[in-house]
Image (cartoon, rainbow, N blue to C red; front, side, top):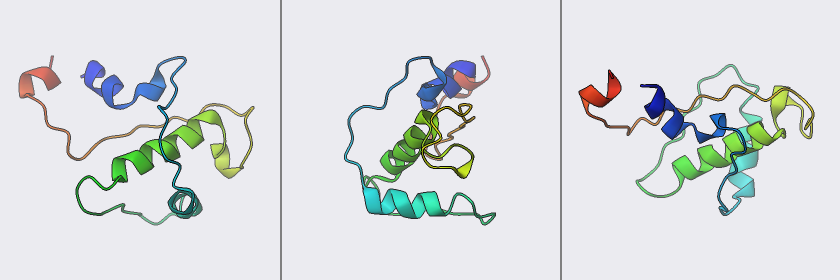
Amino acid sequence: MEQILYRYNPWWEPGWQLESLHQRAGYLEAMEASLDSRDIVMLTGLRRIGKTTLMHLLIDRAVIGFLIDGHAGNAGAKEPGVFFLFQGLHFEEEEFFT
């Protein structure tokens, strides 16, 4: 199970860097604004339009220090604990429980 979690959370590995992706600034700013809310926020949309990419971009910003503790530019702060679980994740039962 640990291998599966690391596969979907590569930022847990030292030296991780996000591959070059198109920075969708408007969407990311709206998502960042919702982080301080205690509301449940859902990211929905059609297949293959970039929902997972947006989540990875947001996680990248958090991991490199832009959103740590809600303070933009706080690059020296402690790295956040980010856990990403992809709803479309499918795996064999044997893989999960070994």
